[in-house]
Image (cartoon, rainbow, N blue to C red; front, side, top):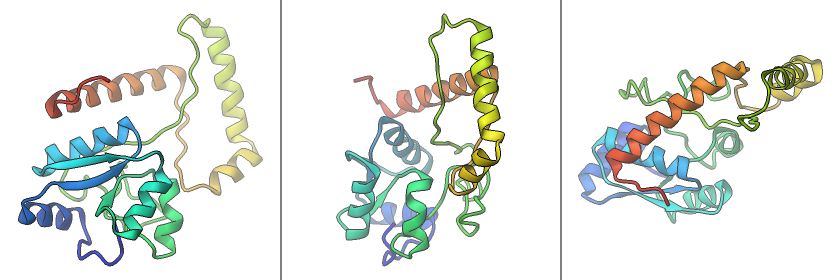
Amino acid sequence: MRTSSPNRTIKDLIDSTKKSGNPLTMGVYSAGYELIAAWLSIAGGIAVTPVMYKGASAVMIDVIGGQIPAGITDFAGAVPLIKEGRQRALVITAEQRHPVLPDVPTMKESGYADFVSYSYSSIFVRSETPDAIVNKLYEGFSSVMASPEGRAYQASRPAVVVNYTPKELSAFVIAESERFRKIAQVAGIKPR
């Protein structure tokens, strides 16, 4: 959100959108963020018009410049601009507040109990890959993440690292896919 905006919370943004009678224009840069915008539309009872950008930087530039009122971006990319006072974060979609921005509430805290979502990176292999190789890769990546260098790198980033086992990651991805399939269905978003 632009820092000069009167909207200080997600409730403010939803209320001002309802009062205006116009859709909320939101910058997004992936199908995943388009689904988050659709979810906000459903949860908030407002019309949201997602505008697709080529990347997070373009979304943030247009929010700062006032070309669009709001955008959905990944946490790590937005933190420097928020810390510099160039953007305002209204809410995060994580389960809990993040220690880097402790004053920014979660969607859950803002009255949307089931609105939890993460932007995440994972490593996948072909489904035919033998379990022994999958487990060896998992152990290798886990040991790198647990190394002093890995921990130092993680500490330098505002992201949260979750070291799911292969089975836990599979269950997480299936659950996320099902959740967003339902959101797409309710929002009328069709595969492209």
